Structure formats: C-alpha cells, structure tokens
Image 1 (cartoon, helix red, strand yellow):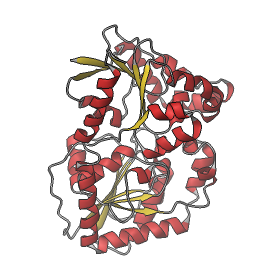
Image 2 (image 1 turned 90 degrees about the vertical axis):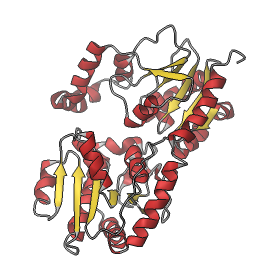
Image 3 (image 1 turned 60 degrees about the vertical axis):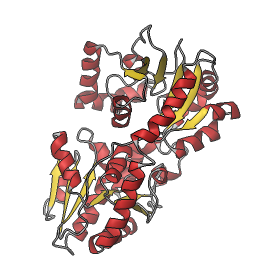
Length: 390
C-alpha cells in the first residue's frame, strides 16, 4: 500500500478534497499529517468574527498577507510518503509530488492575482521540476487558464481529472404536487450568501411564491439580518442559518425538486450533489459552470448581469469577495431576476422537463463524475508518478 500525503489542506479540508481523500484508488492510502493544537488555534482564527473584521479592515490594508495562511498551515511531510499532493499553492517538496488545482491555477499564489503575476516564472520553474510528476486540474476552465499563463512544457504535464460525487441509489418522484426548492450557501460566512447568489434566489422565490401556492424554499446559509427582515413576510420560505446534521440535510436534498443556485462563482459540490440526486439545477452561467452543467440538458443556465463590472475584471473569479463586487451584487438586476423566475416557472409547471433534466444530471453524476471514473484516472497518474523508472 503506497502512501500519499496531502499538504495544504490543514486545518480545514474543502468538501471536494475530503471526498477525494475518503475514496483513494486501489493500492493507495491517503494521509493528512496534523498538529491538533495548531489546527484548533487556526480554526479559532478562521471562525472569530472579531479577528475577521480586524484582518479585513486593518491588517490586510497594511501588510502583504498572501503567504501567511500557507506558512501557518504548513505541516511537515513524514519520511514514509511515496508521493505528496500539495493544495493551495504549497508546492515546496523534496519528494515526488502531484499538484492538485481545484479551481484556478492562480490558487498556486495564495489566490492573489497580483502575486501570481509577480511569481509566475518561479511557479512555472517549480511545476517543471523533475519532482513534479503531474498537474491535476478539476475543471476545463482551469485547464484554459493553464494554457493562458504557462508554457507548453507545463501544459504537457497537466491532466484533467474531474471532481466526483458519490453514487446515490435513490429514485426521485417527479410528479409531486408540492415543489420544494433549495438554496445552499455557507453557514459561517455572511458574504457567502451574496457570492453564492442568495439574494437573487430569495428575490426570485419571493415573486414566484405569489404566483404558486404549492412551492416552498429552504435557504441553508448564513443570511444577513437586513435580508432576513426584507423577506420575513415571504410565505413558505425557511432559513436554516446553523449547520445541520448531515442525515437531516441529506433527507432535505432528497425531497428537493429544484436546486436554485444563481451564484457568481460555481458551487462545485452543491452542483454535483444535486446531479447525483437527479435534481434539476438553475444557475447563472458564470466561471466554471459549463464544466459540469449543460444548458437544457441537466440544468437551466441564466445569463449573468451586465451591470456587474467584476465579471470583466482580469482577476475574476478571484475578485468575488471584494467589497466592490459584493456591492454590485446587492444592486439586483431585474432582468436576471425575471430570467430566474421564468426558469422556475418552467420547472414548476412542467414535471416532464424536471424529469428530463434530473435524469440527465443523474446519468452524468453516475458516469462522468463518478468515483470510479475519477479513480481510474488517478491510479494511472499515481502509478506513473511513483514508478522507479521515472
């Protein structure tokens, strides 16, 4: 059994990476070295509202903080590692390694666009190191950026391995009289509500709920208080701001008829989980979305607002958490809301369309985005990377 160590996932693991680590290909064992004391301290920093406020409004404006998180979260790789997989730009290793890029290669520079441009040559040299055996990218949009920023030699090392989702042996009822809609965001970060399209979701549902008596929506997200007050009178709208037991949340997803996720960046696992349960998806046609969704095949994709300048910025999608981007999000585009409402009407009124999109999505989840498909590719990469012939 060969050991593969992940670095850069400490102290928290993204859900897509956690799913990757829980299901290694045959012959391999995934291990994450962790210092529990250090992990608890870093989680405290990440969860503290006061520290977040101080960081965003004082520290970040004075100091270059792009390397802080990587340095604080660094964990020594054990000697018995056969291969290392660095996450979040930690590509320093004296052992053979395979770089994993979850979204954009700019993540190799701590998700700082300016830092990436300054350090691009150094990053390329590290990627061309004989120790770097492969560069795995989760989506086609990331591959395009590799081609845009790096040389042919780096491109030749790069391989697409799509994110995966567990297969669900579940049969959805597409002929129910009551239609349940869900929106998924973060229960920890209020900004995530805007970034994932929570405002657009709640506004479009508030209009739709006036037309249909048989619809309800669950919003699982930390919703800003001013938004709660605005939509307090909307009927059949339930906000779940606290983390839920996974079993309860999964039962809610099983009963979901429409996944409404009009985000300004693509929600990877929310997308794949919806597909795996045969749930049709409504999303904005933003960065990375078409890597997993096909309009009118497994989803309905809505043209994003022309009023949001951040879409056209060089650092998109990294800039979605900036103040100016979020302020633009808050100024709702009525055309986008009307398009979302039309998509909802279409799915609410037509169970056959819900069924067609949902079944197509489940087929994609069970084949194209399956654990088996992913692990077949990973095993080939790992076998080559750990071969003594290389």
